[in-house]
Length: 365
Image 1: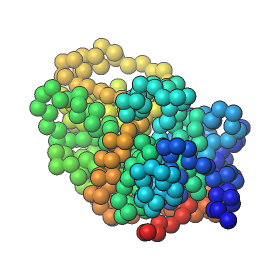
Image 2: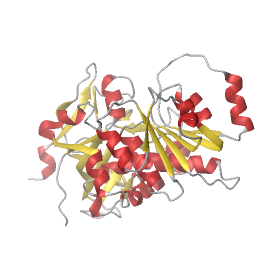
Image 3: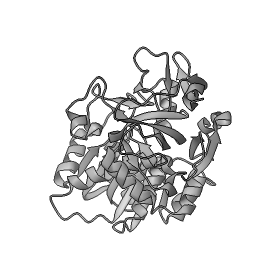
C-alpha cells in the first residue's frame, strides 16, 4: 500500500477555539514544481501563541482550521521530478503568493510584500508545517547540511535576524560605521539567538540584553555565559541604559513593547541604528516628539523595521547555525516533544525557552 493512503497527523487550531489539537488530514500531493517533505521537527514561538489566541493571523479561505507551525525542518520524501533528491534535508521559507504571483515574489523578495499580497504558512491564509508531511515549491525550499537535521527548525528564526542586521547595516552604508556595542531588547528565544549571533561577530565587543526576570533564571544564565550584561528593565529602562552602562551602536528590538522604539533613540550612540521586529498591540501614550526628532537628526541616528525573510537569509542562517556553540543550543532548546505529548511544546513558563514538536527522526540515506 502506498504510504499516502494512510493519511497523516497534524496539529491545528480550529475556528472558534484557542487550544491546538491533533487532527487527521490526507497526505498532500505535490503539484508540478513542488516536492513532498517528511517533517522532522517544527519549532514553537510567540507568533504561534498569538495565532492560537486569535490575536494574529487568519484561516485559509474556506477552511475551519489552520495547521500551525512556520519553523520547520524536514527530509525530501518525493522529489516529484524536481532538482531535489530523496533524503535531502531542507527548510521551507514561510511566505507564499496569495492568488497567483506578484512582483515581490517574482523578484525573490516576498519578505518585502505588503499585507494582502502574501500568505504565511501556519500564520495567515495557508496551512503550516506542523504535520507529518507537507509540500513546498522548490523555490521556497533551502537545502541544509544533514548535521542540522535536529536543529534546523532554528534556521527560520535566525533568518529573521540575518535580514534585520542586513537592513541595519545598509542604513549605515554611506559612511564608515564600526559598531562596538549592542543592546538586545528581549530575552526570549529570538533575543538570545540574536545575542549569540552578535557575540560571534568580531565587531561587537560589549553586549547587553534587556529583560524582566528575577534570578535565578535560565535566560540570564545564558546571557552571562555569552559574556553579555543582563539589564533588568524594571530597574533600568531602555532610555536610561546610557547612564547605567553606555550608549550603544546597535539596538535590536524583539519585544513588541510599543514604548521601546521611542526609548531606543536615547539609548543609541551618535550614528547608531535600531532594528524593530516586535509587533505591538494598539497603545496610545505621550512622547516628546520634538526631542525624538532632534535626536534622530542631530546625531545621525536611524531606525529600520523588519519582518519575515527570504531564501537568501535562510541560506545565511544555515551558515550561521554551523557556528553556534553546542552548549548554547543545549541550553536554548528546553524541550522537544513527540506528537503524543505535543501539548508540552506549547507550555509557557520561566524555565521554558525554546521548544519543538518532533514528527519523525532523521535517518541518513
